[in-house]
Amino acid sequence: MSLANAEVLSSVLLLPESIAIEAVYPSKTQLTVQIVCVRQSAACPLCQQSSERIHSRYGRTVADVPCGGRRVILALTVRKFVCHTPTCPRKLFTERLPDLVQSYARMTNRLSEHLQILGLATCGQLGERLAPKLGMKVSGPTLLRRMKTVSLPPVARVRVLGIDDWAWKKGQTYGTILVDLERRRTIDLLPDRATETVVAWLRAHPEVEIVSRDRGSEYAAAAKKGAPQAQQIADRFHLLLNLREKLKELMARKQKHLPEIEAAASDAIPDKVRGGLPVLAPAQPEEGTRSFRRMSPRLRATASCSCAGEAKEAPSQVSRSNRYARYQAVQILHEQALSEREIARRLKLSRKTVHRFLVAESFPERSRPPYRGSILDPYKPYILERWKAGCWNGTQLLHEVKRRGYTGSESLFRLFIVNLRKQHQEAATSTVLALDVSEAHVTVAADLPPKPSPKRRMSPSRASWLCVSQPCKLDEKQRQQVEEIRAAHPDLESAYRLCQAFVSMLKERRDEDLDQWLAQAKGSGIAELKSFAQGIGRDYDAVRAAFSSEWSQGQVEAQVNCLKLQKRIMFGRANFDFLRLRVLCRV
Ligand SMILES: [Zn+2]
Image (cartoon, rainbow, N blue to C red; front, side, top):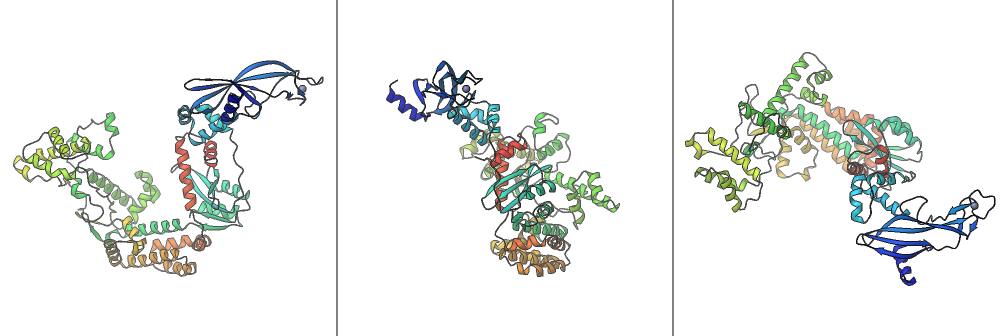
């Protein structure tokens, strides 16, 4: 290789100046570069004395960063020198190339850095699969070992701190995330959310001036203890969330007063096609088989009913009757003067459910998800027409609707046909002409109170949402519903007024009106709002600061989202140290 060529190549490969290229052996996937160190002398690693006397040479192979998508292998000729210092115990030493590769390493420094970055952006297995596509080759465990050598950045000084919890396993184990709100960066993760852990961290950071947090009492106590100098700020969004939760409790208690809304005209329109779109699979798996277990609970309920030949209740009705039975059981145990905790334990229900059942003045109906329509809907009249004309062959009908532009799945079509066929078999042949596929076949069990249909009570969730929403953001129909809620009961009217006052007070940051509002809420005679006001009273300074402060938990929530992503990239299998490393050194 000519000298000029070697210099050009050396600059392309960005090799250190002391390295010269002797030859290059390219193949389709790999570039083997023969290199040698051209320095005249080398220093002994023990006595630091320079020596020019070469004793011997040997070959060493190290992997380098890819070039043009090909793997690069450096075939390095290393020299051994003789140490001249008489007192030095080392007689022979090998020259060192710390700019290029560490002693005994099988890869160059820069490849090692690249793999660290690859590891931080992916995970062991994913990195192993991705590396060959980038011209590198690495195993998952090596990638993880590379990552372990990454040193964490020192925790910078923080003035405005955001603190929140994040779930290792939802409902079971939680950790704590600490965010620098000014720099918009996660600065540390803690393995739990215990007060002592947070206090210890805060004590190590006396520079914190502001702590933004949610409404939970743990972090409030920890901040008070660990950073007494800092101003605490409750989050505005969580304040509204708490208000809405309390409002929802009130609405659940007063559900019988809530306006009736037409099931067909409201946003939740289930009845019309619910029966026409059955949740029956074309071929019902046998109970106990694997495919049966894989079915959704709804499908299973239907399948069991039809297999056993029992009365055909719609799955929603089965679920409702089960729920009603639980409601009654809770009431009966309550009459026996059992505590909520004991009832929950005996019936294996959550305490929240038991509480909701007990405070409700009547059986709390569940709001149903809206029917969003089906891609098959436009073709149903045609199918029905053909059915009436005597074409009962599903395959042929499918061909026909496909010709007419149906692009949905075959299983959706089969579901419809199965139900149609069933209704046909049940009905006498003469009534087939009057068959209505959109009619629901729901039988109400005798022990249930008659269910208002097609009208139903508005759900507490929806009613509370309407009451905290600003009227200017509601449409005409929603404003009408708000008026109906307000007119239904004096308590609902005063709750609405108080909620709206709170929302606008928070929006316009009028902290001077907070005291008056709290007094009004406590004197309103509504238990839920009184409890909300008492909660604010316990956290008064932080809530009051929320009205005037520019800081909120928004940035912290965003960082928690990033953390969740990191957790999932690792398939939830890494330990806390690895997660912390990945979050703090995020690529
Ligand atoms: Zn020496």
